[in-house]
Length: 478
Image (cartoon, rainbow, N blue to C red; front, top):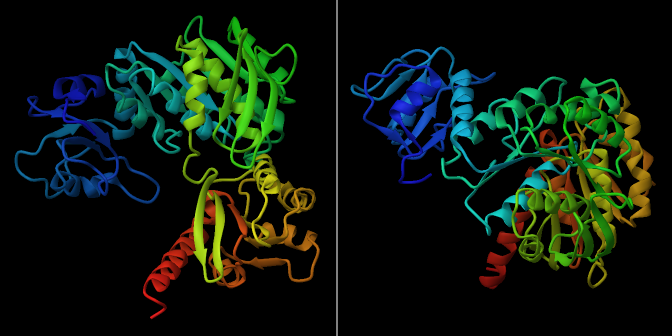
């Protein structure tokens, strides 16, 4: 990650409570994956449900790891290897993460929410990188191992730290928040996600409010004032004796308030009042859901003491994170078409937001609006009704064709008008050839589904097909 020491050996040994025969080495980063470990990094051998990192400790050393952190010495360790022995590598990683937080004098922001937390984190990172040394969670490292790993990678001179916190069961968010100890805690929204593990959306709100448990004294809680469950979040914040509770949204009394938004196919023009400061700016990412969360982003930016005008200006240069709205121009045999990559994850709220983005776009040259959809996971007993209800949104947004996969998306397929505009398959692989065969020049193709529905398979197939078509064109079709 860097040529400079992130951790000196003595710091690692002291923080983790481990033992090591040598203490004259240092680590430039921290990794839990032997496939991607970089030279100079500390490899932490976590035992997961499918693999035990101890089996790959030797491979990590071969790749250049400075040391391995293990609960026992695996067989085949090279002589002289730096081995840190601990009671439990995951608990040791948590302790290392807490030590990183203890030594940091920067301002820390934590983000959670049923939808929008990764995009909000990425927007914060985009802004704050232009205003100081910024460290933030990679991808969706937001669970019981991702958060301590992200913390342990935070350099000691970090000025701004941004951490995404996720959960799908009650009681998971509180420990993560207490580990991160944020100065600002954002809850983007509360919606029907992970209903398989909750009896109601109100229970989800209470679980999301656990993010306030670790908020530092005089810290700020930022919640979506337009959300139906804002009162639950407010009560929980007050129960944690948080005095600085701010809201964002369209309501007249919102602390971070939207005055006006013009939603364009590829961007949004926004007028907002952030803590009394009026801003007029362009957000270079499409979608009403992005507009809403940017209010929270700018509120947090103001709270950590940075330049608000500069922050708003930088949003005109922002791009959507991978799998969350990235636009791809691809080739088909008939010409060019565009893909909106929303393949990373899905919930009912996020599905509807993506449909609205697609609905606002105008296909070129007789193209169609096509939605390629995978199951929304963890919807519980109401899953059939939740999936079928998407038919109304698809109709309202003027979507012409639907390619759906998965047992739950079958309910949507059955709820849509029949007659050749809907294709259903058991798995995402089954959509590839029918979709490729149907593509026209000018089509707009939205790809969205929960991670487990493997919608990236469809995306990768379209990208590969596009490259093949381009190669054939350049080769004269030979």
